[in-house]
Image (cartoon, rainbow, N blue to C red; front, side, top):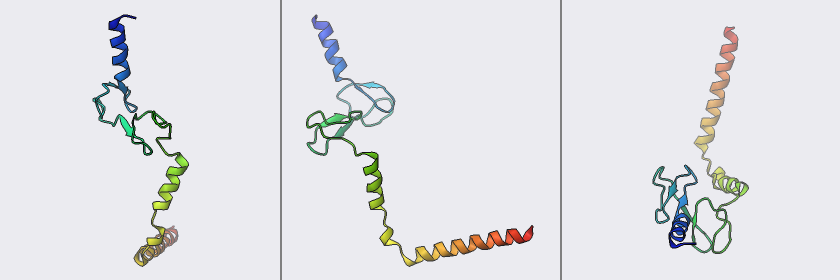
Length: 110
């Protein structure tokens, strides 16, 4: 292998492909030059900077993203069901009664 092909191979390894638009970016950029999407994600376990398309950390091999089930369970836990106020329930009841009245009146017209 000659020096020129080694340099080209090193340059290709330093390029990062955007996972959103597939544009090839240089390794020193944090965002895609074409679409502006982030190219890297930090590992929550060790702090290693990994390409966004990677599923596991290059350093510690931990998962970089949560599974879909964990994402949904996290969203459900954040939903403030216990913080429902009295006026929320009042507005819900008023809306249901109003919808019922509209349906009854439309049925009487025909």
